[in-house]
Image (cartoon, rainbow, N blue to C red):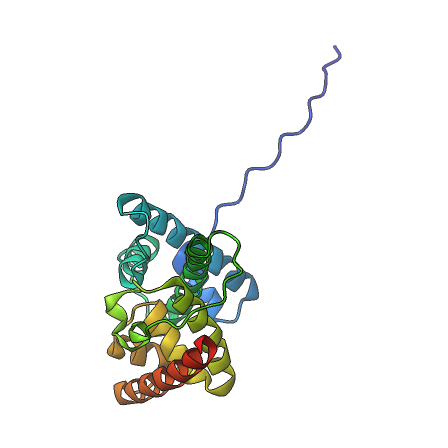
Length: 209
C-alpha cells in the first residue's frame, strides 16, 4: 500500500547554553560564546528597562544600578562565579546599558529638538559625570550622547581609565567591585576615576561650547 510521504519536520531547536556556561566559554576565548553573550544581556536589560519605563512618568530616565542588579539576579541567580567571569558579565552589561541609554537619549533628544534633530547641541551641566555611579543616569539626553563620544576618545588615550568608567558609570559597580573586576587596587580605581572624569569633563565642555 502506497503511503504518501510528508515533508520532514524541522529538527527541534537546540537549547541555548546556560548563561554561566557562556560566561566561562567567553572567558576561555570562545568567540561564539562572546557573540551569544551580549545579545542575552542586551535583551534582558531592554525588557527590564521597558518594565521600569512603563511604571514611571514619560520623561523618566534609566537607573543603571537598578537595571544591572536585576538583570544580574535574573541571568545568573544564585550561581557562584568568580570575579573573572563576573568582570566579563559586567563588561557585556555595561555595553548593553550604553546602547540602551544611547537609544533612549537619541529618542528624547529628537523630541526636545522638535523631531528634526537639526538644532545644535547646547551646553549642559556636567554633574552627572562627577556623581557616584549609584546615583543613576537621570541627566540630559544630550549629555549622555556627548559622554559616549568622549568615552570613545578616552579609550584611545587610556583604556584602563575607560574601563573604570564603563564599569562604574554604566554597570553601576562600586570602587571595590570595579577593582576586583579589573584586578587592581581600589586606590588605582579612585585615581583612574578622577582622571577619567577630568578628561571627560574637558572634552564634553569643548564639544558643547
